[in-house]
Length: 209
Image 1 (cartoon, rainbow, N blue to C red):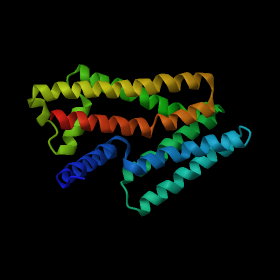
Image 2 (cartoon, rainbow, N blue to C red):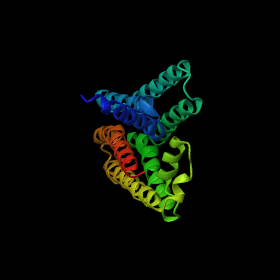
Image 3 (tube, rainbow, N blue to C red):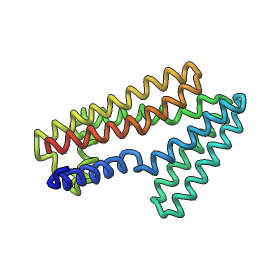
Image 4 (spheres, helix red, strand yellow):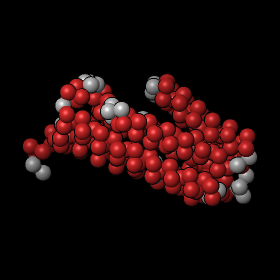
């Protein structure tokens, strides 16, 4: 490998890690969001659709992960938000007695992100511009560059598309009460799509910025 390429590769890795951390809390965010869902679906499927066991297992996993993150001195906000998310999903599902309601907060979040980012574009303050600006340490500098502002509007639409796609697919499965498919696709459409979009965003910004 050409040694002259090494700094560029290193820069790509660092920038991608920063975008990943902002988008989903980094690699820890991937584990924290995926494991409770994975255990919920597994226990629900293997224990003859016993909802309470599945909810307690997911909740226990979230508590253990939160404790680990606290020991690792991770952001308290990140720890609390992850734990609260699982607790709220479990509360909804337990209250209604419907396993599919465990996934309802995630569906709402997809809708909120899609609408929120779309509105940021409509009002000419594309959310991705501010996200990347925060990473670069210049929150609004990109607004003085018309070409860059247009780029951030375009990239922001990509993110709207991502969240809209996830919303449509997961809402359809929610309506069908297909727990196994809903859980599986939530995981597959979670961090893999996020990673791809983070990479795509970074490459677009790096090429044109």
